Length: 149
Image 1 (cartoon, rainbow, N blue to C red):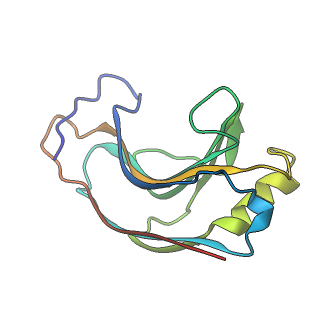
Image 2: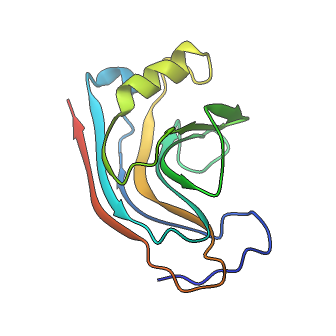
């Protein structure tokens, strides 16, 4: 449960579950990488549920952050890139399902946004909370799994 004012539009918290990769494998070494997810949301405030993926490091100067927003409340974006941050936003809010991450990795490589030899450092699924409109709100991650081969 969280209670957060919306004094600004900055993310206040990213509650998540994740898989760390050590050593860091190359994206090209996988035929398939699929993320399955399920979550529950309160429908108040400003937040997004998303896969949060770190390529070529984890939250360091060399890393690229790739997010796939599966539920986006209070924000409107499409595919965009700012520096080392890339976001794919699902056009419809989805509370459960799966995402073919390998297809999205191939897409950002084909756009020239990350090198073809990029590695995976971490894959997360969770919720970025900006605001709950100052009211108590419950966010749940009910499923997260990765299928790779």
